[in-house]
Amino acid sequence: MIGEAHQAAVRSAAEFADQIARMLYFASGAFHAKHPTQSPAKRGAAARFARLVLPLLDELTAVPQPRVTLHLVQTLDHIAAADPKRALLIAASAVTADQAYWRELAGVHAALDLVRHIAADHREIFLGDPQSTTAVRRMLESFIRVGWDQAIELASEPDELFT
Image (cartoon, rainbow, N blue to C red; front, side):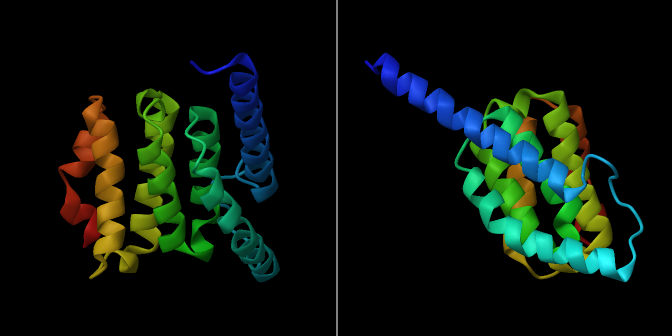
């Protein structure tokens, strides 16, 4: 049996991870605009921010809490232009590890939006790259397991995503 002190420490660590994920979400600008047109200077700053924050977002995938995962996916969607494949792989890792996230309506929407945006803007990462296509399939399968029609529809049209 896990002691109360251990449970309190786990809750505290999860809350801390949630605060970090939320701060990174707001710092990325994802809250204010989904895909704004940016000046070259802002794109450069966004790319630098992404390079610095991607390793931290990757580490936060170890905290399978729906609030944390949602902020990770939304932040990754916003900064994906800097490194779309890495953003996709981190998102897939977060989503597939968080079974409670699969049941969240906001979760399925955020994950499928990220997949659609990357497929539309960076289709090249799917061409001849089994790691990227496997990551998308794993994410979609997570949502299909709990019956999300949106994921089933997207999975049934792989040619639209990957070609």
